[in-house]
Image 1 (cartoon, rainbow, N blue to C red):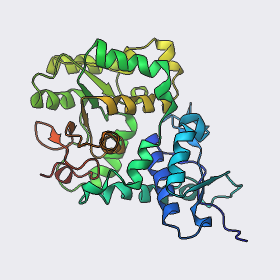
Image 2: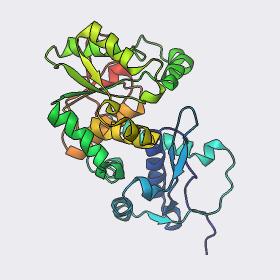
Image 3: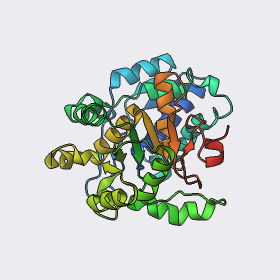
Length: 322
């Protein structure tokens, strides 16, 4: 009788998209195992990450995602889900599955040169099977209805302008990225690239970001953007009552942003962000067709770069390669 512990970790303390990659890495590690015990996993808790750490919280997997849909995925790939054991973790890396995060991100990267293999891949099936419960809530459906039907908005843009991104750019990207790249732009400069690329973009763009953690009031950012570009930008908090927005956990707010972006006719993001890369990949895997309407703004041109990588790369010249 084997005494081997099942594969797993307690929770990943990154944002929800980093958590998705860690969980994908866990599943990929299980599938590689040649023994039945090696295919046993326990599901992590899902972390609702508040950058100021005032509202951070842990949630059961089944409280965030539809467990029956994910269970069917596991059955298809021979993965057995067991209860979380009582484990003492060596450090944050082990507790958070950060080594598995690298494995998960690699599941996308390996398809860069073999895009024909994506649709039936483990990663594609995994993300199709990871369905957030918030998609079934009236607040999500209300926002979608306003964005795509009432206001007829055709472009959703990721504004990576939060405090944590500014710090990451200063401390990491500015050091490791050798070639010039617009990985940190203010909102009006991002929208200016969109307007340069699509002069008929319309009067309003829906923007997604962790708006609780931006440096300036959103009305101030919106005013400067309009003054510079003639384009109005709106957030989800503009479309729902203040008390409903305030009641959203950081996790719910992030999941809503992601799922609305996945539905958008056109999406603009930053290829240095796991949000934008995973979004491009999921848009393809959900529809089984190339998502030729995904763009990046962190290239150096005055216009956007068209993604051709399906979310499998992060360097602009690779992301937009012919």
